[in-house]
Length: 88
Image (cartoon, rainbow, N blue to C red; front, side, top):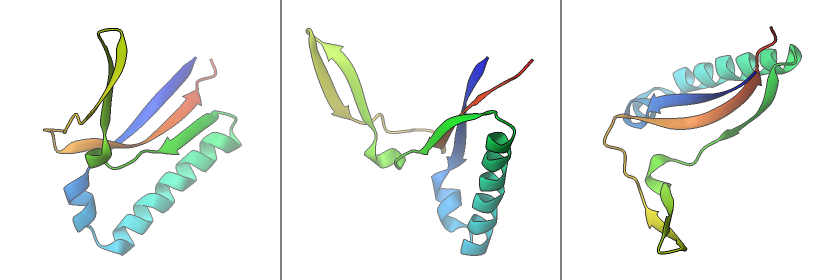
């Protein structure tokens, strides 16, 4: 079975963290992803663009329509995705 994991965070809180704390969080995350890879559970992943650059894509009158947004009204947004598998 495959799982897509979404890494969510509060962009305002993240931007206010000291660089040393951000670096530690990213190191810990990197080690976690490396462990998934080392154990054969990692299938892929990617960093996402910041929330303000979001676009909505939908079909409208038989044509693809791109609009800015949605603009998150919540404090958290997705930062990255990780695709992994579970071995049973």
